[in-house]
Image (cartoon, rainbow over all chains, first blue to last red; front, side, top):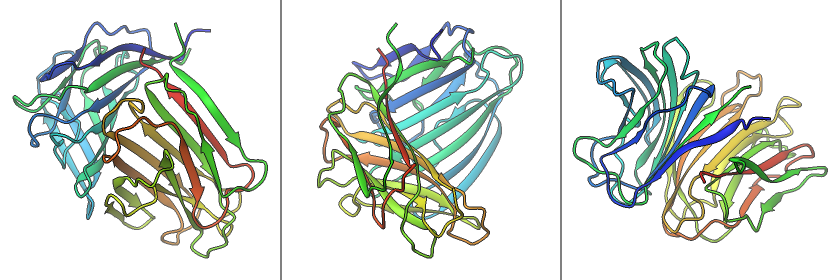
Length: 168
Length: 177
């Protein structure tokens, strides 16, 4: 029986980096899951983003639900050039953030929907967020880019792993 | 290729229990996932019981930020380090609609690494009721910041009563090797 849940690729940063890329993603799975354990970033401002297939066009949109510790909030953006992995709080310099990205039917010929969870608490601050993102492309996703905001860098020890989930 | 998603241990209760522990967790995986389906025998009129997951069952308390909804509005809160006995989730109790159990997933990445550990907990409890606070959706972002040691056990307990027979607890290891 073929494996249902398989690691495709993993990166653990031994030096700081502005981007983490997954390229040449095979189309042989049904869904993708990305687990991104971000071990802080260089500056506590700006949120990381995700893009697909090196597409920097205004082909993305997102809706966010968030708990900020005192209020629940929601926001929406359309025709944007990326999907934000988080919206309401920036990662800290020495506190980790757990991000998961589920990409459904990533190799299909319809627009692509992703579900992002953002878990960022730093003992008195942070947010828990759920984002639904839409990538308006009918092309299979073969590349994923995780990028820190501007010239920020992800800290050493940051880990990103891409898994493939197979339904058959 | 070694399995990526492996069941480490399971516990399906045949009698009520106020707590359980997954101990001696192998240090050979990358991440841990705990999945729970549970109900309490507590008879409180608010139809839910408060439960906790406590990594390493130590005196160390995590901090967390949470988002929850109970049927009318969405709200958020925060618990500071040292104020809570673990990561909190709600389950239906004896006063809730019969045969209803919560579903909960607790994701703990890089549990063997000597660094601060974030976590994600998502729990739901639907009771077929229109009464506020009798059903819950909860998303929690957690942080274990004071201790960077590896996680070797998970302690789960019902703060108000006991998990009833039929409650199930599954611990999985995810490997990125």
